[in-house]
Amino acid sequence: MSKFIMAGLGALLLAGCTTPAQKAANMQAEMNEMMVVYGPACSRLGYAANSDQWRDCVLQLSAKEEAQRWGYPSYSVGYGRGRWGLGGRWGPYW
Image (tube, rainbow, N blue to C red; front, side, top):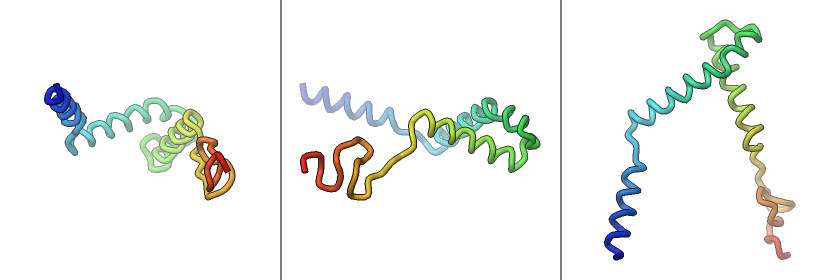
């Protein structure tokens, strides 16, 4: 039974691997999607399409929306409430 579990786990791990070419293709597809979504807004803001400023605008709008969707990261510096609200440096029980 454990051999089957290990074989299944190994197959899952290998299925998750991607080649550099696949990673590059995924990144290109993601950037194309960002240009379609945020490009018109940047053009309306006055940036010339496909200029460096326009690309910066697309990236900034994408980052802004992502930060609004997922929240800004907050890191504990050893005191106060941390990201998950579990107390500070000494933990939630101190």
